[in-house]
Image 1: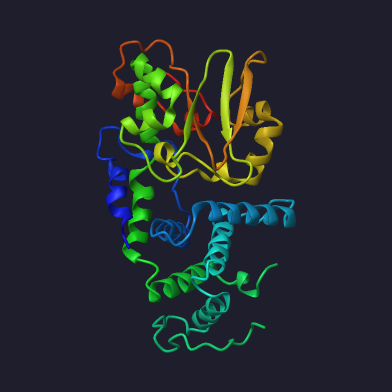
Image 2 (image 1 turned 60 degrees about the vertical axis):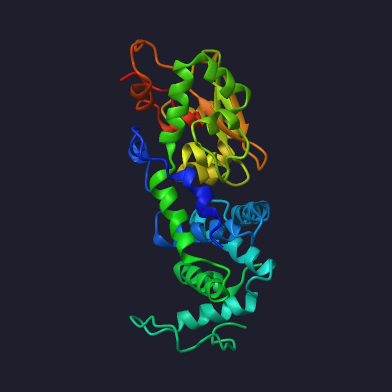
Amino acid sequence: MTRGHADASYLLDSAGPAAPPRDNGELVFAAPWESRAFGVALALHDAGYIDWEDFRQALIGEIRDWEAAHPSGEGWSYYECWLRSLERVVSGQGLVAAGDLQARQSQLAARPAGHDHDEAGNGRHHGQPGHH
Amino acid sequence: MTSPTEHLDPALRVEALASLLTERGLLDEATVDNFIKTYEQSVGPMNGAKVVAKAWTDPQYRARLLADGTAAIAELGFKGPQGEQIEVLENTPATHHVVVCTLCSCYPWPVLGLPPTWYKDPAYRSRMVREPRRVLREFGLDLDDNVEIAVHDSSSEVRYMVLPERPAGIEDATEEELAALVTRDAMVGVAKVAAP
């Protein structure tokens, strides 16, 4: 499952002299969900569940569609495109059926504010209000 | 075709996706966290800066780097996702190279980390190809008219890194001192390296 960890040790080399990467940079992720969407894609690829080129092609398609629909560029979010691609590839690969994903989303959306204990629904889904 | 759920908060959508994958044993949260931490903290332009500084101080390394970027970069221990095929482009007084990915945001992660926001922006991706001289000027890089600008569009096959020109007047600088001068923007080609 975590076969990438051994491989990834090469990545952890920053202890060296030429310190931090961000001196002329910016935060890599603007929000926690962006970093999670990033990490989930890499972890699924690392475990062999998704092919990176499939994901890249999905991402190219999502970006192209978004740009066609928003000529002004207003509202652009790279990681929204990334997340849509990830959802598409995950359901396309049959890892999680699109219907299951929507049901879980509805379930989480229906959660009372400040109460994010998610045992209650336990995945026995039937389309919540607002979809279909 | 957009599904109604695309209007949901993306944080909720990520949570829904990750929770289902985890329940099915397809996703390991520790691996997710490890990747995030790696690219937030460990992999970034300082890797590429070391490559550039070595190329500036070691002519044989420079030759190897230009002949086979991937292999020469791996000599310094930098490899991994999005670095399978890295081509290094050498800037000269006559030719200035700049990198873009018009279709998505391909970028040489092992040497530069994850791309900055502007690199992923639709405007950068489309305009750098059409009017590079003008876009570079907006970045503050005003190139002489007789300097040729070569725009390189990344792809799944090849990722590019620019080897900037070494600034004049610092012949005595060590490799480490040089590495500290090299910026991410210079390695994408939207800036030059300035002497301290």
